[in-house]
Image (cartoon, rainbow, N blue to C red; front, side):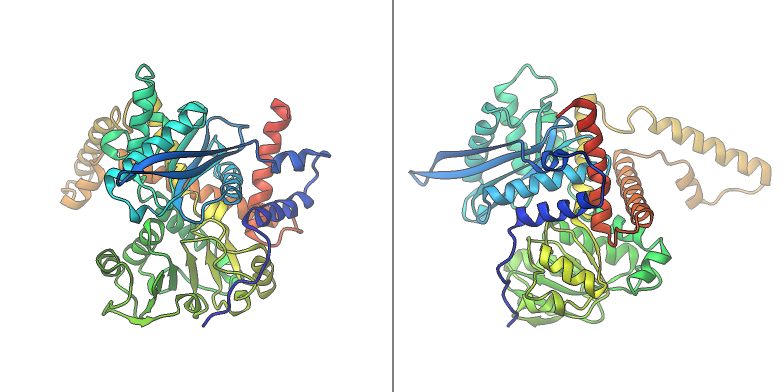
Length: 473
């Protein structure tokens, strides 16, 4: 069996220590560093909901780490391990994450102590609407101040219930759709939001492999094609990252780790088939397309080119960090590598694409959704036909100049106008590219920065500190 995590820093302490390291590399005024780290406010609520004829008490939190930009932004998770420490740490990460990828939001996060699998849809709706009312009544949910989104254990359905609750309480607010992101497309959501975090992980890795010097620094070569990848957690983020890397980049998903163990196949697993099996059986055991291993934690240590932890915090810790056998870790989850493990992996030369950048795809596309809701017009509505007509004129010009017809496939590509999904995906790709380019440039600019995490935090702190200086603190 794999070694259990040794006692170390809490998640909140890990985030603060990493920020302290970054601050130590910078020239900041006295007290500004502590101001940046402080969590502005935390709301704790406890409320009853009738379940099977009996009142049941639920406890939840919503933390605002920084409101230097409004609204503050961050998901709401439903999980039994949720506590105030975790919510505050995640809110802090959201502040830095938004700054790294140039999304003009402050950082917030929420959570409810609940196992959503144990409740019916009707019961979950009652619980979610009551939680939303608690947040709304205390000023922790609105399109102008605090905008939640899905996280672990929640999705478009829960966001739809929340935004409808807000609409009922504020029927005259024409911007009510902007109170929540990650909503169903039919109820104000934007196409591409559900896949956004996993797609962002793919775009982060694609950009990394566009820099041969960085690839060589990690002890790798070539492109994503054929790279052996281990995915820990096949939820929304892990599935979409694995699916796109497999189908579009020809990477080999050689190991998938879930709650009940892991499955491996050196020739590559069929991600879609594994997902269907997982939904039907509740685990990966019994999947016929790979070898089953009961100790999933131990499989984190299996040799691979890229390791993508896409589930919980602290899965790589000081107890297993020296046995992790990969050259590159892409943190699709929040805080999957502890502070102690991060130091060990640095010593071993393992490169880490940090969570504060790597999983920012969700908040980037949430920003697009929020803008769309406030603008009251879908992306591409006004310009799509214009670009189609321009494309058709280009086809006609080519045919006139060459005297030859343009192929049907080329005509289709040239005369096609971008729709909302195309524009959202393009914006996400551009945001992830520019952010990693800035991180790489910052690491090269400052000799004391030895890894991407510190470079990312320095970039975030520079931007946030600039805002604090401008507006006061």
